[in-house]
Image (cartoon, rainbow, N blue to C red; front, side, top):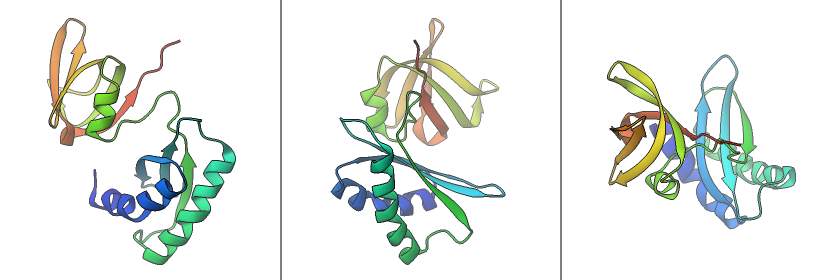
Length: 150
């Protein structure tokens, strides 16, 4: 997780939780029109009104703190079926699930991996790919998502 993403979480986590939602994580996507995507969840699911409430609450805080120096669009979203995984607790919660990873640094000449998440020990996860286990350090994972199977 980048320093900016850590700072954003620090600014918005309490207000999001005060509204009754879990702050799943944030993605800041830098491109010609940057986007700050904030993922929220709760046991009852997420509605468009929930997203609007969170947007209104955290927009004020983000404007005041001004942690992002470039123009951006704020998006509030549920994690969806292909839920992103951000924290060690997320990985623990989904042991036994199919996931896909994009790494920061290639392992065995590969940046993209898919498999079954079989273990989480401290900051290391084990992914079963085919019949072989492969370990990854969490800090080497750029992006991870559940793979929803029908």
